[in-house]
Image 1 (cartoon, rainbow, N blue to C red):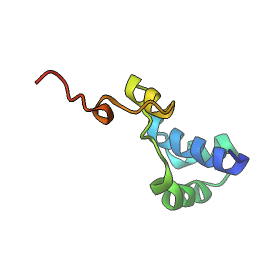
Image 2 (image 1 turned 60 degrees about the vertical axis):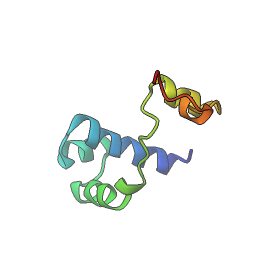
Image 3 (image 1 turned 180 degrees about the horizontal axis):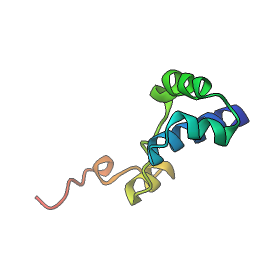
Length: 76
């Protein structure tokens, strides 16, 4: 991942996960609050948090799919 993309992801994660305001995040990254705001507006739709860290996400990421991919839908 490129350095700029990684920084954008870090900024978006900080804004979303910690609910910090633009001033605090801007100070952390050495930016202006307006720059952080612009990043949040321009890139938030591209931020992918679909891999939430659970077992199914890890297995899907490793190429094994999920139970549903193999026809298992739980005890019916």
